[in-house]
Image (cartoon, rainbow, N blue to C red; front, side, top):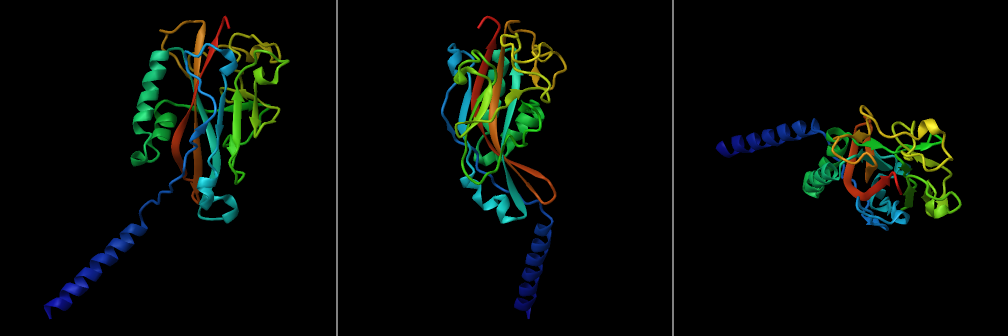
Length: 250
């Protein structure tokens, strides 16, 4: 009977769909950090505000905690940064990232940071710090980072990293942890050879040549990261942590 032929034809189509779907890549949606405690921009003049401060969003990704041993694992929160000599270029890049930093585009913003603009992961001194920068601890963590020191006698003005208010006794570093962010050697706590200005060819530097030789700007983002059993990474939307000015005469 004709209806039986139709029935089996439909079943066959569903089987084809099912087996085809089995070969498709599976995407995992991670929730991004959303809370910041300090707003800092390229034109922020108060050096006491030249730091980033935010809250990770681990509880929103609890389904993928490492302790649950699922096929996909939430690894933690990575910090990406880029050094610019031009605020115009920085602003242009930020606008492009913001345009795709929406749920409809999934991880396009993180991909743009990493692949298009070649943002790098933040390093530390001493080395050996974790990657991602804030490993999953299965709880939300407040993260405060100051890139360079302005007064070594004042904890609030000294380069360093604090997690939930605890000084981790590390200093943020750049370019695979080889150099400090003290481009103009204001602080003497680091060896002189590590206090150097960004140069052409540095992976973390976007040079235009149109900016002032006495000013640089470090843009930072936070991203929740994870990976599946094949070590294929996944990224959340990104959180703009702010822009840290580094000025020669400040």
